[in-house]
Amino acid sequence: MANIIRTTSSMILKIKAIIIIIIIIIIIIIIIIIIIIIIITIPTTINKKTIVVKTITINITIKPISSSTQPLLFITHPPPHSPSSKNNTIIITNSVPPPKPPSSLSTTTPL
Image 1 (cartoon, rainbow, N blue to C red):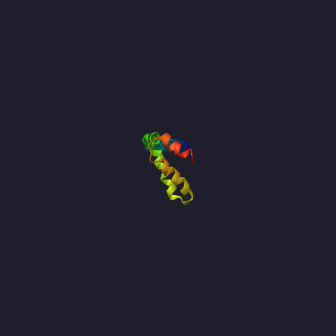
Image 2: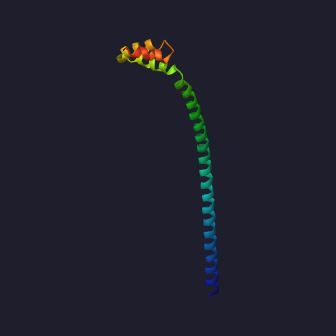
Image 3: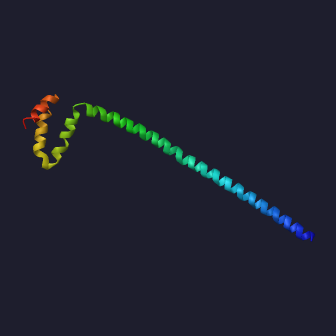
């Protein structure tokens, strides 16, 4: 009977040790997953910040172009490439050489 008690107590100790080892392994896996998530999220936040900076600089460069008279020039350059809008390109090129917007409006109103 004493041998049976010893074997059962040793089995209980082995089961407890196995359970403790499994719990430690699960905790280590959770810590590794958290570290991987942190490593993955840090570059994406850095990339998001740089993307925001890039869009701000793009917006700054677009705003002076739209505020000046240069968009007329940008509008005139694509139509010569398209053969269907040759009449429109002649009208726009006639209105581009005067830099003042009222003169371009006056050239477009009689047409």
